[in-house]
Structures are given as C-alpha cells and as structure tokens.
Length: 123
Image (cartoon, rainbow, N blue to C red; front, side, top):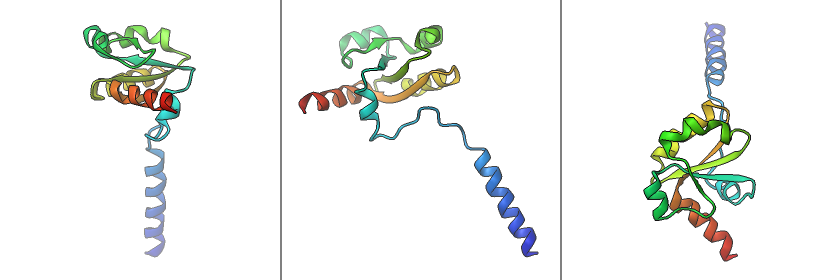
C-alpha cells in the first residue's frame, strides 16, 4: 500500500513538473528595470496612434496591437518590451510575440516604462 502511494506521489510530481509552460524571457518586476534601460531593447507601445501621440516612453515605437501580427518579422531577433495603458493589450501582444518566437518582456503600462526611464535619468 505504501509503495502504491509513494508511486502515485512520484508520478504526480513528474506529471505536474512536465506540464509547466516554458517561460520565454519572463522577468521579475525587479529585473524589468534592467531590461527597459538596456540599449539593445526595442520599446513597443501597442496603443492606438492617437494615444501614443498623447504621450509615451522615450524612444518607443508605435505598433498598435491590431498590427502586431503583421510586424512579427520586423521584431524577430530583437529584445522587445511591450506596454500600453494598463497592461491588458500588452498581455495580448506578449502572447502573440512569444508564439512567434520573439523575445518579449512585459512593461505593463507606458507610465511604468517612463517612470523606470526617469528613475535612471535622476541618478
């Protein structure tokens, strides 16, 4: 009986560990500061052009969420930080980019990315 229980636990652990998703380019909130300030990073604001024009992070390019799929080839081979107003569109963009092999990081909102940039400039 004990052997069956131990066997069940062992098999369960193996199955659960094999089901974890691959965490492509996932970083903690603490490390996003390093990523945003890396000169090799491409900052992508996925909001609509009118929102982008009203304010965004320094050196960010605008690729609206609706156009991300059409711009995959221009982003491949680059390290990309995506962001929007509150993070919802950025989450969707992250899914699309990762599914297409782009190294992408979630900057959440443009205000978050801008604050990270401003913090570095104050030092």
